[in-house]
Length: 338
Image (cartoon, rainbow, N blue to C red; front, side):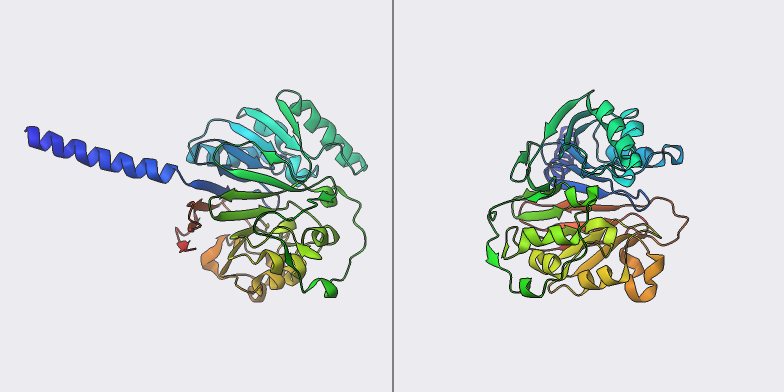
């Protein structure tokens, strides 16, 4: 009997050890907010960082999906909410989310830079909610103090980091062919962009940073360096995702938080798809505009139908740079070794 008990205890300890080991990884979920953004990170130390909150309205759809993701990852509060910019698909859901889960720190680029009536109203509503927590105003080069990760601010308020980060500093030979687009005066150009580093794993998320602003990050010198994962800018729209940026980042995997009829533009999709060294382009939605020619295989798309069920993509990253991406729709997963 004693031997059986000892054997059972050993089995339980072994199982617990495996659970604890898994918990030390970086977890991330790309939540389906129908063409907006809500990307939830949980550090190996158990702290959470949410990039944007999706839309408001829709019977609290996006807030409920974020809370469901938080429950899945075992967290009961948002330690850091990073608001990339003040458009409705990124900040519109703050109020509804704050009703459902505590938010400790609100991180943003500062004053609203766009003066349309809608954006002013969104910003004012956000500031009211922000006042109930701690406000962290950041500029390029700052770090967000989440335990267990290095989260560096790359862009904010229209400015970019002045100097190359460790891993960056390479001359970008493609800068000479960069073609500027018309100047963007919207909040998109002011997007707060971050580099998340966990050991040898690197992920970049630039919000909706626009084409001309991307130039400042990678030309004439690539200040960021190569990354493992690129959260595709601006939902995969042509106003972002210049070849100079995508090729300089040289991602192994890209994750596109597009909707069925928002983002996933064929031109941007092709630039990312053709990026040297890219292994896979995962998508939150099948992009109707792109057709079969400009969408990834069904295997790596979370939602195939326009009337979807809010399926998500989950990433688990180890400190040695190995990471796995999982599709909740079909339970397909793929591991990428460093």
